Length: 179
Image (cartoon, rainbow, N blue to C red; front, side, top):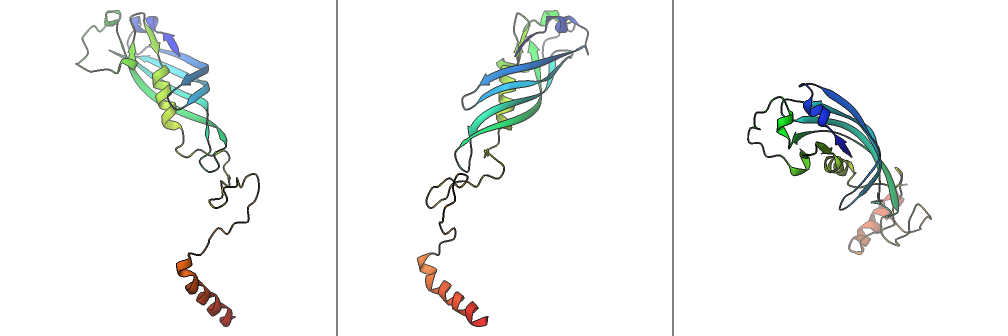
């Protein structure tokens, strides 16, 4: 996701370029995003390039209920400001007002804007905390550990704590005598 922005840096303030990301892939410490696609708009400001993007991607994870593989389609929209290393290309040559830019958000000396880190961070924030393989995933039985998506189990979902057994029996007798 690297773009040459030399022509944009030498353009007038307010100039914009429309680009696109197609079939991109990013590996982070926890995830591998693939089939990254989406439009990218780059706007030349007085000192920076403002990048706006709306990207979709696919990520593989584990279902939080049954631990089966889960393939998720996610969409992320973000804006980031990239500062050029070659400030002399821009018509406004004033120095930045002592802003410390993240090194991942700097356009390098060859005028290449690398969006990989910004896209990766944005997609990582979009991944659900508890991904599901299917919206109606039944999960794993917490008693016999059977995957209830594959087979039903006959475990009692609400076992009675032995300390409360006599009280439960009393309640059953009372409800039976009232009927």
